[in-house]
Length: 511
Image (cartoon, rainbow, N blue to C red):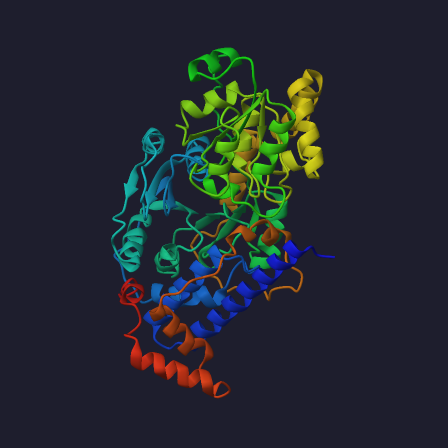
């Protein structure tokens, strides 16, 4: 039987699902292509930010594909052999998203790697450009103020110079669909499925989908109709570990030498609470039992969710160092720690890889959103009580700590072996068609039973707030028909009393 909390989340997801399906019907009824693209972008934004248990949509992708075929851009007839262009919506100084791009370029040495940032808003990681340069490539930064169509044109033209394209785009970014949604563009495309638990755009243009683990590959096939897919995994970092011990690292960082330190890291949203337990529960239950334990949580926003309350409650046991420089500060905190606990409700894949590679024992409650090597090891906790018990035992029992770490590391070596990762990457490249295709795919009807992935991401199920202008458009498209005369009259009232549809949405898609 579902708890009240679970029932609430189920109803929230089903409500979001019904809203999204109505959006699909509205898109299908709209005849104006530019309006259809604007509606599709709104639908994608909604599905990404509000869990619907729908993971792909040919109806939402279709307007962008149609638009792609109406655009003509001068393309290079020849490409430079052994070159790869990594396409990112945006890069980050912290988190695993950008690290995957950097490591791909470092591991696949037979290629010259370049990267293009389509909508960069934040600081660009210094090492990203250097890694591209070291591989013989370049870092391109497009003007974020261009319209979506203008950026798509530039991307198509630039990408025609490369032998292989790899997409690392945001889930609701339609630029790649417009750039590559036509057979006029011929270079094959790999979609690196970094956001496999969420809805995303791009199935139509993916010649191959590279998944992170076996569970996620199953989701791609069964719920996205992504038949052209296989497990690639996250590339490990081949840099050398810091040759300093824990004591030296703590002295350099100014951390206490006589305390047990638990470290965790991740983007702020990975700690957004979803029922019990959340990360504040972990902190409270561990510290209340043993005041000698200190938490350092990197990446967390000290002004959001439960962090202000927790900082006030545990001023001597909880510290939030903010964003850490990945090349210098971050590895120092790993070395200085006694235990790493994975973020919840969403785990950090690259954070876990970095921790294990640094010789640190890791515990996780994430069984679906984590790497196979961790979820199949002793480091995977099947309930909250087990997490608390193992945390304390690892901190004070060296023999047990070594047992847990060795079990994780033995699996880690097999799964993240660099030669094996490169071989899997080569195998995917060999499976690619000689020329890029645009693919039809089926709309997978939502099941009555919500997938575990959606349960894990219901932190994104907040109500979707429209402006009045947006509301007017959706009311006209969704509700007005011969069976709903009252809503029809209300829609006519809105047309008369509110201005035309917000022009920003449609301007983005003008050719």
